[in-house]
Image (cartoon, rainbow, N blue to C red; front, side, top):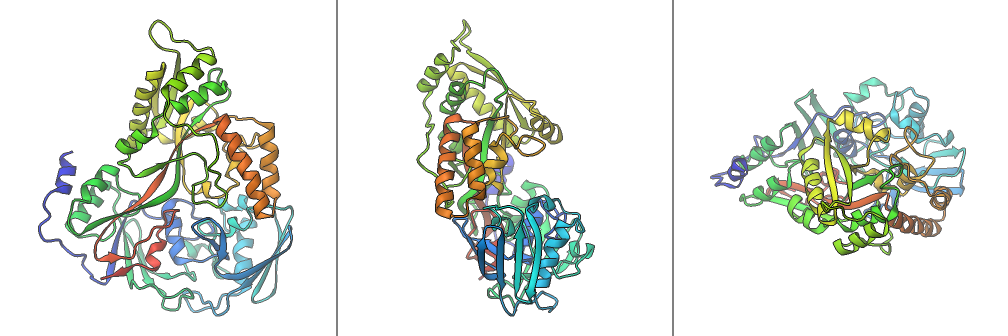
Length: 501
């Protein structure tokens, strides 16, 4: 609290970043791999979005839109024909052709790039390039999310022949190009004056690695940083910094999804009434107000509300402890002499936010007779435990993956239990399985939306997850940086159009 007081205290005259023409952008960690075929962690993918382009992109409703491909045809469910944008050049001056696209995907699929993304494209049988501006993908089986898998941050196009050097000397076609990299310290990007989408208005961005959140916050207060990252400060820090002159907190709806998962093999949680009771016993509005300082929105589905396939008309679980008690009674769990109906254990990571959430849930659930024991675990142990089903409940987040409707197959299909998927709670519903399989191969968007609506309704009733909230995207920055509009996914794409004044 003393530190927060210091953040909110008098600033005096602010100190500008060393170069008034450079945006000083603080990040939590060094990107692991800037080769867009390989890097998968958040920092790498955020920078991929500035350095590279892919065949297609997506808009704020997660609908597919052009990128390097201006148009595409799907003559049948197994064939995709892409027509490339003319006149695009890589940062080193080489023209983009279909050979670069084919090389990018072939190097992933063949394993030459040693990429974990290889498992994303098992349906691709072959790729051909009849001319320099045309790329044809032939699939082994229909897959309705195929176009989604071609977007950034999943895939960025690299020049044909790129090898291991792409990780440290990345060459893309994006709005920014790499000027320098100092390992574990900083990355400098410069504007690409030839970018086909229009050159950025910012000349240079210095991404400086500052691991400690409190140090990032203090640098913002002092004026030695322009942007404190995206979603990299605690809600309390953001609240304190908004009281500092010349600092602005941009807050916009995000898609990161927080949830509590339940184990269907557990004899208590196998009762749907119990799962629904826990949802009714969870006061999400209060949790959002006090734990997240209002920086989130209640969730009712894995898909965010801005998604084209989002279904709002599902069973809702507004805070209703009386209804929770009725359901627990109906499930046969009466209160004991000590007032306790059931004992449950919640596993979490050791992050402070997870610990605080667990404590708040324990306090809320005890009001309906549920005694909740908290079990915070070091991250590797936590991930191992939930992967092998060693839990009653756990809390976690989906970041980005829930923007693809095929997430329902990955997390709720009975065919996708670990290690072949993320159905860690061993949820089984044959009707749901059939719908999930249908939507996976349904190429008509309207028909697929109908299937996904039914899927969301079934999931809301069965309650394999207690949906908590979608975390807002928050970016604290100095007022000299304008035009920041954070996309729902929370990337750094706003730098494409931001300005310095």
